[in-house]
Image (cartoon, rainbow, N blue to C red; front, side):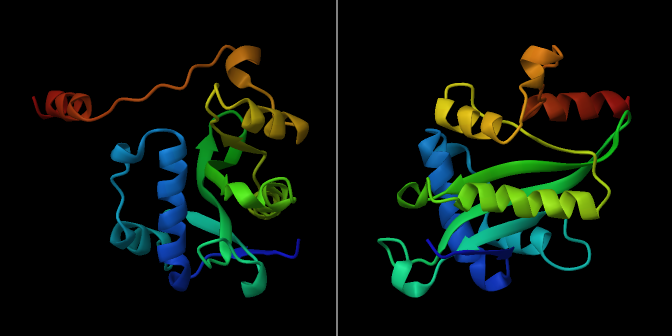
Length: 172
């Protein structure tokens, strides 16, 4: 399968938003998607971009059933670990089901790894649903380790009204 991995461009916004929605639907969480194409466009481009996105593109004759040529994406941003320094955090990695098993996901992560090294990162971090065994197996094959199990770390999140309540405490 012929494909290229490249940084996304504004022309890819509609396709990437569609893939984000596909991924959310796969996780049975489509109703939780709050980002809009406008938000992603505003935050993902320019010198003050808060995230980056790589896309996997195939030639038009190899496109998806719907005719799309963007068949996968890897969404990432820089973060920092007080113990290790710069880290690339991979928010999403998604490949359209009909294109899985063709090396596209590995190519997306390989390009992300190249970027991480160029930016002085010591590691790539990401989350994976514990019920998605094919994804867990894919990441493990590439050298990932489950730090929840190995290092006893838990990923925590404060959301919605709890963020509001916490912020109000600071005003007092």
